Image (cartoon, rainbow, N blue to C red; front, side, top):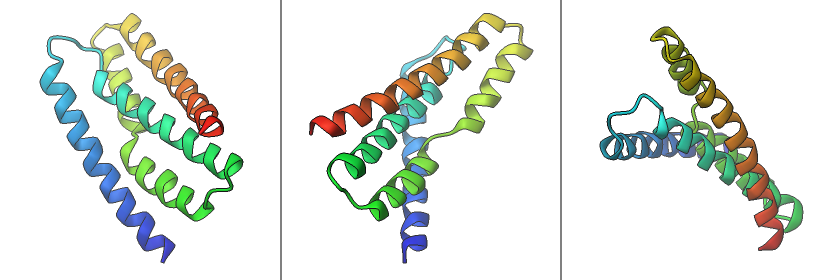
Length: 123
């Protein structure tokens, strides 16, 4: 049963990623910086940190963490797209922007995960 729930959550996460990506790209134009992908990965990391914190601090369900964390967030976040977009920036000669994308995604995602973990301890 958990595998089915995880698959459904993953599908929902992928649809949410598509919608979020489309919305951001429709609002942010004229820049090569991949705002949508960075924002999606950071927000997904915040959710994963929050779920992990709930399980640790509030004795939340590990099954729920698995379904939402692995399923939904796995479908929602996208390390492969972030990697591809960074490589494309290098290929078009935008090395500084590529570095900012790589560092910003990593630092922002780790920071958001930590913030989610702390937030779960407060709630």
